[in-house]
Length: 305
Picture (spheres, rainbow, N blue to C red):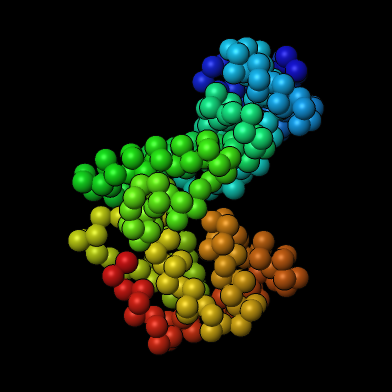
């Protein structure tokens, strides 16, 4: 497992990928895709058994740097699987960028993981990997600044969540965070929405000639200093009641298209494949469903977000 070079901060896929491309291809030929090179490299690394994972974690706690590298390399595919879900969220971050950020989170997870609590490492690491990636996306994409008075609260929230992840071995529920912070659950939801990363609301929806986007369902408000991600999450909450009146297929199509369930927006082609119909048919159903939402008696609840 010594074929990859993992620095203290993270494993950087660029270096090894570029080195392999230079050594394996003549200069006059087009260089192979560095992503494919990287995936091939990590694909050859064996996954760990639970016993091996525990043994490496024990060695990590004893300060064994080689154990850190071995545990990290065995989980690089986990980073890739998570990073792929965030591709396209920022025009400035490629898949390799996201993988690199995820590897930073992976290394943090390795340093903080306590194997004696009996939790599965991948479950624990997933939170750190996701946090590292979303933080990088937020740094690139955030267009509206977090209110100054919320910075200290958000910092405390982050520390509490990290502690609960360490204690529980999983991402804590909002109710658990509220109890730990001695705070109303509504306040915790507000902090979550403000602190999360931004996503684009400019993707067109409905008929092309309508030139409308998901963001059109959210009324601008200068008095509320939220990120676009916060607005998207607020929209998601209030859409639940409205979408209840859509048929099952319409609900699932909108859920997939806008990532309302897994936070991963899907293309018309992807949704079409799921339902076994053309992208045009999905577009037609989407337009009809969005029209129902616009006319719904509860649509006024979306205003102000």
